[in-house]
Amino acid sequence: MATDTLSPPSATGPAITLVDVVKGFGGATDAAAVRGVDLSIGEGEFFSLLGPSGCGKTTTLRMIAGFEEPTGGQILLHGRDMVGVPANKRDINMVFQSYALFPHLSVADNVAFGLRRKRVPKDEIRDRVEKILRTVELTDKADRRPRQLSGGQQQRVALARALVNRPRALLLDEPLGALDLKLRQSMQLELKRIQREVGITFVYVTHDQAEALTMSDRIAVMNRGLVEQVGPPQDVYERPATAFVAGFIGTSNLIGGRLTSVDAQAGTGVLDLGDGQRVTVPLTGSRPAPQADALPGPPGAGALVELTVRPEKITLTAGPADTASRLRGTVREVVYLGTSTSYTVDTAMGAEMTVFQPNDGTASVTPARGDTVWLSWATAHSYLLTTAPIPAATAAAPGSLTPR
Ligand code: ATP
Image 1 (cartoon, rainbow, N blue to C red):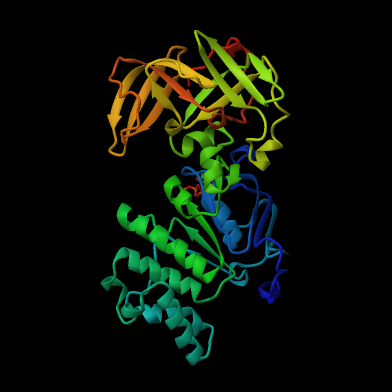
Image 2 (cartoon, protein in one colour; image 1 turned 120 degrees about the vertical axis):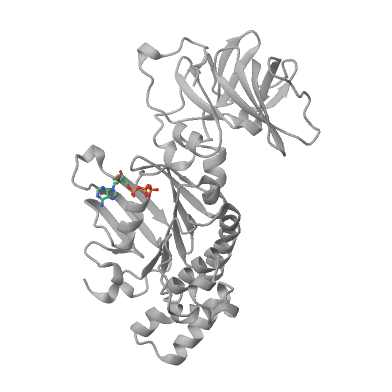
């Protein structure tokens, strides 16, 4: 197709749009690598595709780049349909985990390589290379060969080489995967700084949830070829939409059961578990926008629900606290983690719960294995999950917990 795909888009529209994108590699449709993905990525956004190995992240990125053609759906870059547009006409660049630098060329020549091939005037090449090396803080390494650089520095050269082309968007496929943990963490902050400085759209593929939480403006959590939730880091962590998201991002406790009562005015439901134990969950207003549509409406009394609560939101006490959610249990495991202690508690109703208590002297109890404790948390920290209906045969009795 024509090179006019390089012309400026409308200033207001999204940078990248995916509409019901499907990619099969020749197998049955239900085994497709990507099974109907809708995304809208804003101009200048740091957007991450996060998910376990094989969930379709790389395939999605490669379709945006133009290295793979979708088998269905539409991909728009800056408002233009990309069907049939080759990768080199898409005004985007891709950075891979393997840096693929030329070993015999200096850092500056590696960065200048693409511009020379495009016959950009010499003076302009010099200016652009100098400027981008300043951005990635490698000015003093301009004359070195790649083998004289650390892994993090080599990755910054690869980044500079992509950015010097001034793409409208940069696609990054696990670019920090080969670095050790400490270097990876400092490069995460560095990458975020560079992205802010150059102001272009970054689409970042990773299976590392901490990495995605650290860097992204928004995250799409993928599972088996589908996007389960899109939102800012705080949303996907604090308000996971599905059991998969809750489990994949951090540690979470899942509680399933039948609502014993609903307070329509307060918009909450209660699982009354007897013996002073109960769990209260907001039924409305806690759901991020896309998932709100997936819910048929707030569940009523008697409905089977699944909810989640994060371990650090739970407080341990010796007796029942005056909170909307509280459960009794026996401590099975205590693990000291430095800044916090992790408790595994078998609740009286059968569900296993994890609780993190900070080691800052504020804990009201520091129980040992075998001790009886009460777990309590505020209503706002219970989140209703979007789940497939539980088959009747395995459904829990009213007011009981389903162990997870
Ligand atoms: P990882 O983190 O391991 O790279 P991913 O989430 O990026 O995983 P993809 O590489 O997109 O996953 O792969 C998704 C699915 O598509 C996998 O089951 C994979 O085996 C399959 N797949 C990917 N590329 C091809 C191909 N060229 N031919 C056939 N199947 C493929």
